[in-house]
Image 1 (cartoon, rainbow, N blue to C red):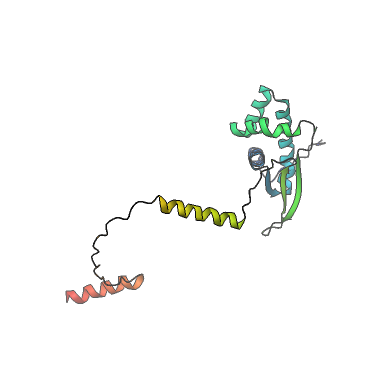
Image 2 (spheres, one colour):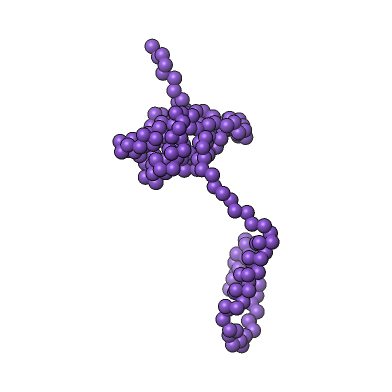
Length: 183
């Protein structure tokens, strides 16, 4: 009997399905928020949450297990050092799936698959006045530190060449011209 054998197959062989889920988990930990289909997100959720649980334990064995899935030392380090400490008080639910829209080509449900506690990056906004002031300072700085003007060289007028013909007609005219000259 096939009781409790339900699995997200994703229309792939086992090795390809495993590679897809590992790639999704790598992308999630790298960017902390990705857009994918609903089925892929649901399939990758358990793997990603398991990796965060490993990182919370923090043992060398768990670090090696995480590396066997992610195959990237910098990502393993990021999970263990910066992502796992955010979830130290939480026992589960490290990711969320937010409906996004239907894909235009095939109508598949797209979702935003992200970590619940993302790293906050501050954006520094400069006002237009500050940007303008900064540009003026650069121009003044360049003007004061530029080299003295060099002696001007005499410019020779360029010889005018016949305009080149482009494309298919150029080749045909060249052929006919050669035949006419040979007669």
